[in-house]
Length: 280
Image 1 (cartoon, helix red, strand yellow):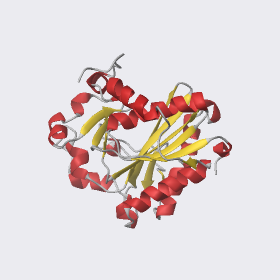
Image 2: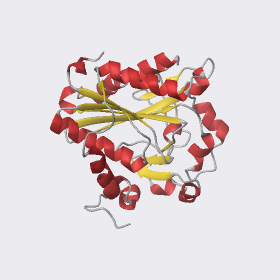
Image 3: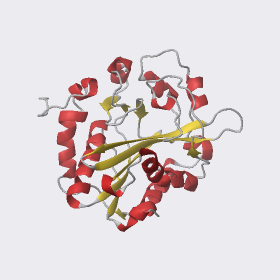
């Protein structure tokens, strides 16, 4: 259990939601941490399937036609890095939100602290996971799972022969004196979708599966079990109080923010936030 456990935390095992709303909820949780002194750990799914772009990612790397034909939404994260294909089966996502004054100011120390429950969750699942102990060069820079592997925040499974395989990507940003970390855990591999959302035909599905592994491949446990292990590890890490959903007003505020930011074309393509939601 972390030293942060003497603060007030809540655990939300969230309903599946669209990508813009999921991203907006993190900023609403940040506001709640500052204004109401309630920190959040959360496990969540994406529905419909969504490509989340890194903050500075070029929208020209997206195969917009593929996404439209396959009902895959697109949003842009506040964090950097490459794009990630998320769905309600192959991906399990989480968020940790806490005031910046309560956590290490050093980025690497903060990553180490916030990834403690993620590594513990993998242990409970029976996955031999660890921070990468060496860098690996990028295979395809626009894709999070195929970018260079960074020992600071990439979680991998050591291979018996050859390089380690990526299992989870994690990223942080600071906003209004709050630290927000989110991450994607690979439950199952969907190489065709992970590659199809990008404008590349130079990377094979075999290349993807050589670089990336999954909880399912490593242990064969059910997705429900994996979600439960992640939620319980987060709960135990900070002694969080499990709650049944968001507080009054939070979901409505997230939907309003999603409409003028995370779901707006101006943000997704140009990182511009609307002062009001666009019509329609």
